[in-house]
Amino acid sequence: MRTRALTMRPGSWLVWAVVVFFMINMVGVIGSVVLDSFGTTWFNGWTPAGYTGSNYSSAWNEFNLGQVMTVTFEITFLVVGLSLLLGVPASYALARRDFPGKRAVMLLFVLPILVPPIAYGIPLATVLYKFHLAGSLTGVVLANLVPSIPFVVYTMTPFIEQIDPRLEQAARMCGAPTRSVLGRIIAPLLLPGMLAAGILVLVRTFGMFELTFLTSGPTSSTLVVSLFSAVFSAGIRSAQSIDAMAVIYTGSMLVLLVIALRFVNPTQLVARSRD
Image (cartoon, rainbow, N blue to C red; front, side):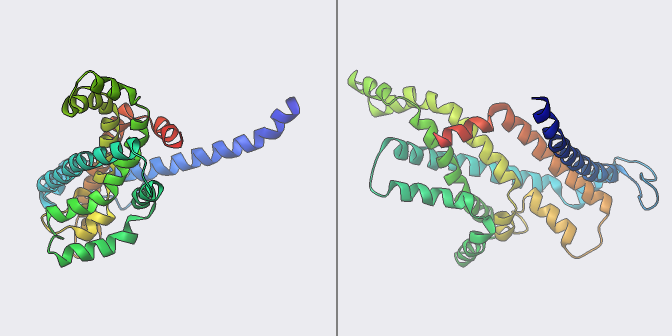
């Protein structure tokens, strides 16, 4: 036992060294952005020459972040609502019904999750531009629904399969109409799964860059697309203001991830999808 423990120690130390090295680099990158967002100038030395909070107000006014944040949340909540509205009934049908080609249908739902968004984002954007939908809020929402609805279906189908169908059968035998069965029996049981799927879609949509970038316009850009435009578009902009915008985006994503992990256990979702 001692020999085995001794032979495993170098490997353990190597793993911990890699983890610590990764964490130090990640903290260094994030810390430098946060410091620069509060700095006045930062050319010589390890820290900025001075600190100020005016960079955030400058970024808010320069990049019109009030409107950008409003559009971001409008798109995000519209995608979440429509994904649940369309995805939950589809999940219920897939969980409760057997039909020829069911595996093929499930595979089609999984493809938008597994395939990189840029692979189908370009032809999707082409179609939306052809019908004059791209560049608007509607076009961005439609583009983000393509991976979001399958994500809800893939999350909710195993969740619905765990609900005993005999509960519905007993209610129908007692004379309950379909509306009562769905509203009073099925819906309360589906709420935890819908909450988990909705929060995960919210986080995914808030951070979705490729599809939003390809289909958005001047009045329909989300925060991540506006951040990209601020960094790479033509013109001279203050690096401190751009870093302040990046901190706002990172902080928003962090809040959403904390909320998601508060209500969703990723290991449970993986276990359900394997069952």
